[in-house]
Amino acid sequence: MENLQLIDNPEAKRYEVHIDGLVPRIEYIKAKDKIYLTHTEVPRGLEGKGIGTSLVKAVLEDIEKKDLTLVPMCPFVAMYIKRHPEWKKLVLKGINIA
Image: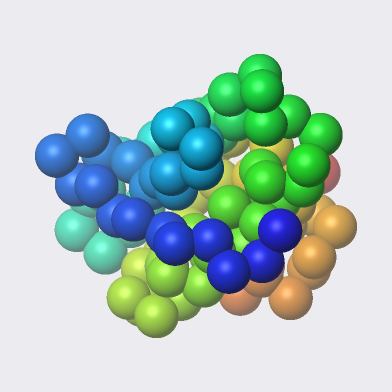
């Protein structure tokens, strides 16, 4: 499920993609140069298709491009980073992803 059109929607404080009228999203809080990813949501009709994983990857790429420091509060994002340790470079120093 690559090539999602990632939209950063600062008014709604979330990254989102639009698929068949549904909106998978990752909610965030930005503070200066830090971004806290707080919640990932994939609508029920899209579950099990790898969209959440593709969405996390696209968001991490955007965070890297914007040179932000990541605080992964969402368990889904933390699990993704645990499985893909190359992304740990974005995570705020001192945060341990168990």
